[in-house]
Length: 196
Image (cartoon, rainbow, N blue to C red; front, side, top):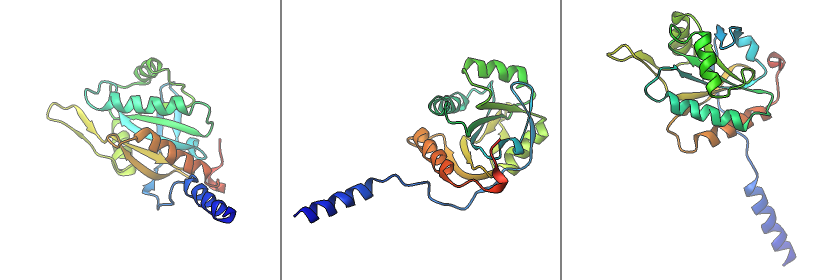
């Protein structure tokens, strides 16, 4: 009888173990970039190697999904505020308006720590190429010339590879992002992805 109980308990324990993010082929590689942060500093792909990061695309005057996307990023930021190897990156797709000063004000309203949640701007053509060709995201203008964009959150591993894509309307989005981030943090660090 004791053997049966021990065996059953072992099966229940095994079934309840946390499993890492399933190993999937990368969706792509983050291309080289040189953009400007809300602090007016240059940020490059190399600066983020060794970090797990979540990137989204938004603009500060967005009348659509951006406020909800930003609130999801804020939830992730609050929960991971002590995790040193994670960064959040929000890329403005309206860089003509979203200057570093505008982004700094926006980030300030969100209490975003600029060392952890980075808002980026840059030349329009470079932002468009990065978004569409590099990160494989939709970007267009509506009939009123208002930008329209992807509502996806991309999870990037320490080697600069796009590992997961999550849509804003997914149930339990923030919890899924936590699981994705946690799984990537548990992966061994390669020599090309040394933390900065």
